[in-house]
Image (cartoon, rainbow, N blue to C red; front, side):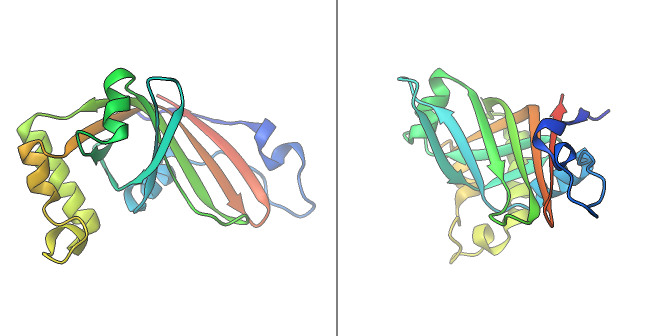
Length: 178
């Protein structure tokens, strides 16, 4: 069973429709999942101990309804998640007139189960290919880093997600509640 899907008309073109524009509808969760599976870069937002935000780009893999990302154990996001596991991962485009931005909010849990780590490694390799599998790849060796604990892997099960759609001046704001 999927999440509850709701169009928020306050932030959609439904409140100010353009003449000739199509009907504004909520984005289906299946479309958001396709975007999460295909996106190469995500922005993870965490909270520092003093309450300031920290936002940084990461690679991530959507696997079995969970978004996985990684970080070094001494990096700021790892320190932030140690004191407050709430986070958001965002992906999308920079076009004003087309695309779908997706924000996933949830609680990051460190993955330590060896079998699950192998599944995550396989998902990363399938998604990013030579960037991970080739010796010349930017992230070559990340799988071994996952296995040895030199790179921490976090799982974020969506609690709430948002989709911000743009299609030739028609805007939609969808909320998915899990």
